[in-house]
Structures are given as C-alpha cells and as structure tokens.
Length: 172
Image (cartoon, rainbow, N blue to C red; front, top):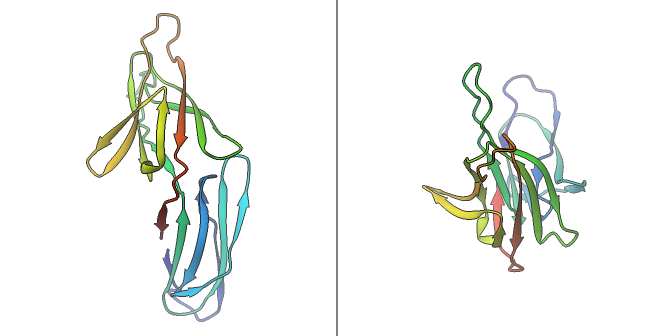
C-alpha cells in the first residue's frame, strides 16, 4: 500500500485493515522499510491484519509479508434485463479448526460450469466436488453444477484440502 498527504500539513493517522484468510499468518509488516507494530483480529470467517501509522507530507510504503495465504475470487456477471441470474453464489465458507480444509457451499444454474480464480493455489493438496484449472496468469477451481429437472439452482459442496507444506507470499 502506498499513501501520503496531497495537501495540508497536519498529521493524520491511517488505519489499514486488510482481510486475510484464516489460514494466513502475518510474518512482518514494514513502513518505509522499517518494522511497524500490527495486530491480527480473528473472527469466525476471516482475519484482519490491523496497522495504524501517522502520515505527514511525503510518501509512505507499507509492506506485509504473509505465510500460507490462500484466496479465491468469484467473478460475478449481472444477467440481461429481465433474465434469470446464472451466476455462482457462495452460500457459506467454513474452515476446519486446524485450518487445513475449506468447505464451500455453492449454488448455481443447473447444468452450468463456473470458475473461481485462486491465488497461492500451490497450497491445495486435493479438491472434492471441483477440479483444478488454469487460465493465463491464474489458477482456478472449476465447479460443475449438474443438470437438474427438480431445481433451477442446485447446491453443491466443494472441499479444498491444503497441504501441510509451509510457503510464503507477500501482499503489498
């Protein structure tokens, strides 16, 4: 993260609270190359790394080093006017107590295929209810919702099992 005052000369305080996965561990945080204090607030579904620092004139560069970070993104598209939604819905996300397994309950249009874009997917050991895939520059999780005459938007469970290997990623 890069920040700085654009006008005025009074000191301000920036509080930065990026969400990180429950699997992630913050290794260190630096502001302009120097260590800065931080906290990690853990909740049921995620964690937030919290850092506060004063800002005067000039530029500030905040770097965060994370270990075992994993994430995914669901690219949603609005339906045509008057059309039914065909997008994937993430209904729930549950981590195991040991944080080595993520269970997603999803729903999508019967007979459709979806992709979740992932980062740090090298940590995935096995998938249940989905397959790993690739796009240029991205790893994906491909989810196939089976055709159904009973339900327009069937539910599906996807379980992501993570390896115990320790890796490192950096978020800036």
